[in-house]
Length: 360
Image 1: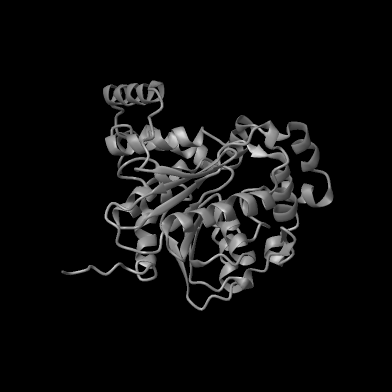
Image 2: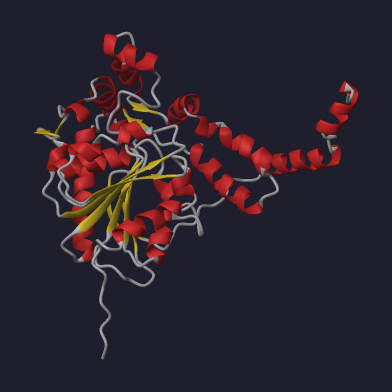
């Protein structure tokens, strides 16, 4: 019989102190380095309103007539969609022949405390889509919404007569009765023990550091990357992507107090969007009004927006052409790795009117 001492020698490898020392030196060096510069894909400003900017990213060689209009979450910075060459969702799609517009919401200042979701959807998003259509010189546009930007995009599509040819929604919350907000918070909201009104009114605009602290406490995407860095500190490509993500996760956006109250009361507390009771700009948001081609993407390792939060939209819309796909990725890695551009192109290429070459 093998002795206990022998089994320990056989099955527990000796610690390589030299290698471990180098690993931790590498980790410390990475953490001390200045944050990387995020170089955007070629772009120009085509519209501005208050803190918001509409960027136009022209196709490298235009292949499709119908441009894409990207809407990211109000809760984070939109440059996760254009995080650098080789990883950029925006850059990937321009390489594939699409003209791309990106609405950068910006960060509201204290003077913007009264901006509501109604304002963001109608006065900012709707106006920006109209401007993109005029700028592009075409009659239709594809709207692509990511995370809460997808929720906002679906709301707009349900209440507007804008010529939205296709609607693409990634990691989109529709059912707010589950997900990142702890059940005790939801119970507190519903029984009045958790007062969002007083919290939002006290700040006016929720500062960036408070928003960062909230998300850091709620989501493992702010913890697990450090474990991954320690494990893969010698992987140059991974480290470069890690540094970009690290910059983005710590670069939170502020949030209007009025919109914050709507988000928690109308969506998280009362789940009005799912119930068909949400009212924006005096119109009831009925998702059955959406009848354009629809593509919905969920991610299998998502800890921010669970798949059951997204699925209900497939039954609520009237679209005859609708596709649902689950991708092996996380909420952020779908964008951070540029994977989303490949997935979106496979669906969009047949629905974006390919430009036919003219032969002399």
